[in-house]
Length: 139
Image (tube, rainbow, N blue to C red):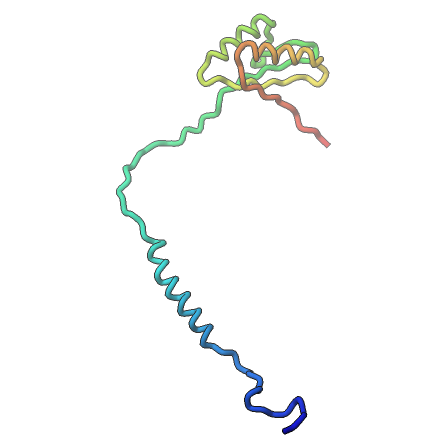
């Protein structure tokens, strides 16, 4: 009996090879699972759907342009209008179906109060969609 730690013993030998049996078992199980599930994924019900010929309507919503110039003049679609005519035009546009969008353009130097008056007239007239038109900054 030897006291050497590295003495050769048949029972304590190192295993230099990978045991392939568990890996093959796992691969066979996965293969069976895939073979069973793939036909279930592609199973579909064949039905004869009706055909309809409809074309997509690409209509842009109508819009009205209201501009407020620096001196306070209001333009309805590039035509000068008074405050009374503006209110009448807004009321008439609000009755349309579908309701047009109001594009509001205001000069940089116009007082805010004048723009607020036009916005309140649009709201009182029944227009619900108001958009502000601006110019991009140039470098």
